[in-house]
Amino acid sequence: MTLYRATFLHTPVNPFHHSDALKIEDDGGLLVQNGQIRESGSFADLKAAHPTETVEDLRGGLLLPGFIDTHVHYPQVRVIGGLGVPLLDWLDKYALPEEARFGDSAHAATVAREFVSGLISSGTTTALVFGSHFASAVDTLFQETEQVGLRTVAGQVVSDRMLRPELHTTPERAYSEGKALIEKWHGKGENRYAVTPRFSLSASEGILEACAALMKEFPGVHFTSHSNENLKEVQTVRQLFLKSRDYIDTYEQAGLLGRRSVLAHNVHMTDRELGAMATHNCTSAHCPCSNSALGSGFFPLKRHLAAGVRVSLGTDVGGGTGFSMLKEGLQAYFMQQLLGDSGVPLEPSHLLYLATRAGAEALEMDGQIGDFSAGKAFDASLFQPPEGSTMQAVLNNAHSTERALASLFAGGTQADVKRVWIGGKEVFTRRETAQAEPVSA
Ligand SMILES: O=c1[nH]c(=O)c2nc[nH]c2[nH]1
Ligand SMILES: [Zn+2]
Image (cartoon, rainbow, N blue to C red):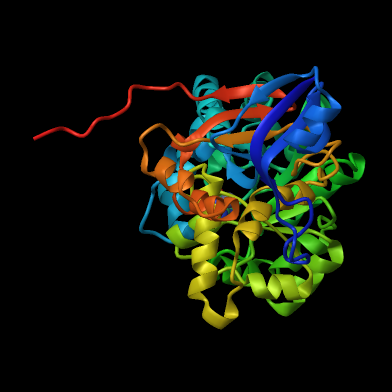
């Protein structure tokens, strides 16, 4: 067993429901055996109870539960930064041409490495991933995540209209390729499968039926898609699905909504749609950087909470601007501030919860990951800014550990991630480089 000594913070309960949800151990101890946390508390108590265990000293930074990104696109790493256009134009101009390249296995393998290393080096240990339209590229992604150990819920993206011909499939092929991928990867190591129609705009009723058939045949799989992101998209979906009451109803009528369903965005929601999401116990993945970059709109967090809809956080790379869940937390905070009375004032506890435990709940993995309680896997990220950096000065002089957490969300980047563990295995260690010196006159 290893006794990790660290300043750690976590949210074992939901801060939107409990005012004391943020738990802080300034000099904490986590006793880890076979990748699982056996005991969690103060270092002094754990050391007294286990005087002979090996101690690994992680003091000097903040240890957080590994981030859980609940909406991120594997084939969009290289289109990060396509600014200046709304969703449907962004898809045509940036995302879809790049996604059409994933029939090329060498390209798919190179980007799979970029994608997985981008996530773990940002402190993300679990991700709900929008895969590729090409089954072979999804297989490549799972091979990479299995090798690295990233906890991954992913699936083949399916569509049969309004994208481009290379990205279209048929209901029959969507079913047969999905079935083969599920049988190969769902439950293998830390991989799970998510049935993934791209969005109702690009999916006929036949595609949604094929998705439902897979979910009926394999009840443990997850479901993910997009919904209510952009007004033009919403209007088009309304015209395409004349028998549906609204956007959410297109998925609801197909029988795709349940406890393991995560819908990204949900910016333009009716009260009926929020009620339906609450009834089906599914989750909205809020992607604030993407919503800002694409000008999609302000996420109605207050209305989600009032309706009892679960909310988690996603980076939405590449509509979003990078893999940092710290940046997503900050952008969520900014947008709620800008909403004034219609917004929810977010505190550090909310940001940490949204970036960690909320994702575990969205994926129904909260019995296993999401916080540092005894019994959870040791999935953790150590944030320790480089020597001489501004962030180091800020954290070292924070008035409290809670303030340090707020500062980390405000100014932390990938450069501040020092070490990352998944199930007790260290999957990322920062290479220390020579310190930059100011040039003297
Ligand atoms: O943000 C988004 N990114 C996408 O790739 C996409 N496809 C459909 N809807 C989408 N929204
Ligand atoms: Zn997306």
